[in-house]
Amino acid sequence: MKLNRNFKNLKENYLFAEVGKRVDAYTKEFPGSDVISLGIGDVTIPLSLKAVAACKDAATALSTVSGFRGYGPYDGYAFLKDAVVDYYKMRGITINADEVFITDGAKNGIGNFLDLFDPDNTVMIPDPVYPAYVDANVLAGNRIVYVDATKENGFLAMPPKRGKADIIYICSPNNPTGAAYTTEQLKEWVEFALENNAVIFYDAAYEAFIGDKKVARSIFEVPGARDCAVEFCSFSKMAGFTGVRCGWTVIPMVSPLNRMWLHRQAIKFNGTSYVVQRMAESMLRGGYEDTKTMVAEYKHNAGIITRKFDELGIEYTGGVNAPYIWFNCGIDSWEFFDYLLKKARIVCTPGSGFGKNGNGWIRFTSFNTKARTEEAVKRFESFWKEFNVVREKLFEPVK
Image (cartoon, rainbow, N blue to C red; front, side, top):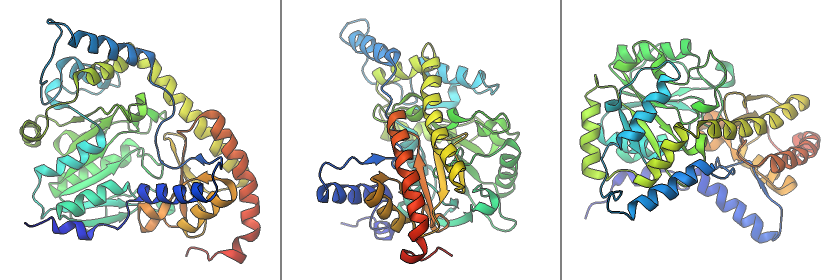
């Protein structure tokens, strides 16, 4: 038996597993502690009642002879694919139903999409970045090259003047930094991809948080993107489906990847649950206002955090077109994580877990409740003032 040799190249601990491990250790040492999480990006607002009603109706239908469904289409039911097409049309973007593939979430879609590529491709990934992109390519045995996202470029990596790639990862609004590309900035990436005969994996999981008209909500707003890009999106954050699991992938018909992906899904995937797809349809049809309300609540939480950061003079990105706030702590990210947990009972995500350029930075999320976010900000204000007094005595600065 031969196991995948690339497993040995993975980091020992996955970022969010390490966060959970440290929080568990703290709560065992201090049982009953009131810990507030602004760390892992899971949602807290309950599902829309429209989604729940759609779930009940679909489940009831399955108990009838006329409404029963067995295996569904590998690429998703027409009712949801058409709803996705209309969702794009509402934003002035034309796609067709044959270009839409329903999945069980953007994370799975992006990870599984590597099945379509040989392992000797060169993959270009921004740093810092959502670690699943890196780990999936390590497992696949691909060559990874990094492009720097730093405070000098607003944490928006741009195409290198020199260098080549076969696959390019872009997440906008970005996880972890909250920065978002304008259409003009994405145009440079599309041109770079076309010159390199590369494909862009465009993660648009947080597009619903964008309010700035200059910021792109889809890679397909950019001329030429249909010739080089695939877009992954999700109901997780826009509709609270993190535990329900539903997303979609848009693959233009001009790409050979369209038929390849359908073939791959037929081999390895029996489709997203009929009940879940009916729930997702309800969110793009009659429940769309509910999704906007949900997103607005999380954006309000982000505003609570960023307004306090402005008062305290903290350097940050994000929090405007994204649910993430990325701020400069000035010391080793894990040291800050431990100190913040100990002193304020707040959970963050250390920036170094997203790459070398993340060290000295911290990610907060706006996915907790309003009340808990407000309480966390009160604690943080006191913590930050004390931290600034002891920082030089207790910690080495990040260079």
